[in-house]
Amino acid sequence: MNPADILAAEAVARTGTGEAVLFWVLAVIAVAGALGMVCARKAVHSALCLAATMITLSVFYIAQDALFLGVVQIVVYTGAVMMLFLFVLMLVGVDSAESLRETLRGHRLAVIVVGIGFGLLLIAAIARGVRDDSVAVTGPGFGTDPISALADLLFIRYVWAFELTGALLITATIGAMVLAHRERFGPRTGQREQSERRLREGRRITPLPTPGVYARHNAVDVPARLPDGSFAEESVSTILRHRLRRAHTESALIGMRTGNGDNDSGNAPGTGAGADDDSPSTHG
Image: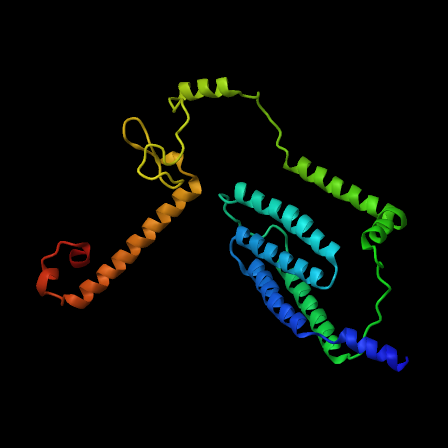
């Protein structure tokens, strides 16, 4: 290897200040997003963290002059697959309770073994990269027209592999639709049949108003008012009602703890206002 090639390789391997700053900033965001995806307790938060990591990877691709990969990372993975997954979670799985019961035997042990093996492999790769100072020889690339060269690889040289991959994805999609399909064991009921059934059962015939109607605040968490002035609690989403009850319960518990602390510190046993109080704490 002549000195000119050595100098050219060193120039390519040398990292600039701007590239180093970009790497360390985006690397922190990517690692934080990955850890948030794994450690988040809610699936929606995990999906958002994974989307942030994917966007960071796309910026890495664009910074390395891989514009096509960066755009595909954003459009296909982040924009289509990840957002679809997030919307499905928000619309379908937000009210369902998560089961912590294992359905596969020994899957925790398998996960631990695979995780340890992946960690050892990652440590070995990082140690080898830190220890090795040689510069890898890269290929010629796609030239001045990367889109045409990439299309030539996909649709001419590797056309059968590309078509088989598309067929596999279509088969997986159809299989998911078949598994998610539910058989109808009874006759299909229309709006007329549902209204007649509600009338026979004595339930409400007309639909409920949307949240905030005839209320003081036009918000999704404010129940609508009925013509008689009462609140229609069912007009508010189920998850919002659960959150409201939990907030009221937590505030009541905090108030009880604060009140008990004030009584214990301000009133001595047998003296003051606490001696004549008919509360369960004195007559329990």
